[in-house]
Length: 409
Image 1 (cartoon, rainbow, N blue to C red):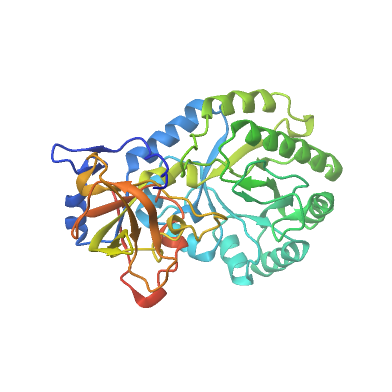
Image 2: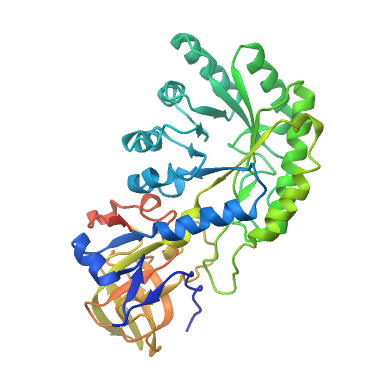
């Protein structure tokens, strides 16, 4: 038997013992969506995270949503009423925002390898472009000149440090992300001299960290670095984007990020920020932390089989929808996401089983030797922490299986 992560708060069973999501019976949600596999996103849980952010962090910190975490259009439409901006990484994400009228609030566009068309679209959408190289900065200026407009631009900096304990490190060495810190001031001066509307600096050392002290340490180093670059460039940035890095607990033994300790320490740190940043606005771009725990992936058991002393629950879903839960999205060692039998939510554990998908690969494992109530064909399996990097981060076309449905409640 192998441990699972803890199920996030906000979920309970109804009188019939079935999982409730956003106040709705999971079986009813599946019927309304006309089947499984199904992703369900609870906007009340997302709203609670936004409220926690506003309560715990210092006043004036801007909250941007990182669309890459989950670009589901109804989610974007809902979020545009509560966040201060969106961070995008592709023309497709921009189009998703535009399709629901959510591109009316501030946009920033980051990521390496932006095409000329993407730069043009970003300029036309009045997005702030975080340039990741000197050549990208030149292309941006050339395209803006052709369009007869003044581009809004930030310089993304590749810092000389990492975020300790990060699940994914984005700095501290050679990187496709950002301009090396010792070259950033020259690029800033060049953009200003060329007439660009320079908006500031973007520094993102890592993601998926649950240690508030490590996050604040990296933020402090980022603020110090931003001040040094501003001094060297002789220009004060209107904005310093400190990236994200806020993690959520997926696995056994992990605890939620202590937001109030983080907020207190961040306030102390910003109270002593460099003079050259005295008028700067600070921004955090969060995706996973905002929406990850609000999502549930529901998949139906289609077969129950025994093989060499082990029980397998075969479902109609799998890694083509929830690659991360299978352990194939950056995990060095596979660990179990929190799972439950949605149709027997809260029932006593009876057995250890393997929950697998319907793909022709041994990698298609949603739960390995997990303790669950006895499930039979027809029962629903719930995979939690499915609100971020789920459907859009999975190989949906693999084996041409059915595409998962999505719904927001």
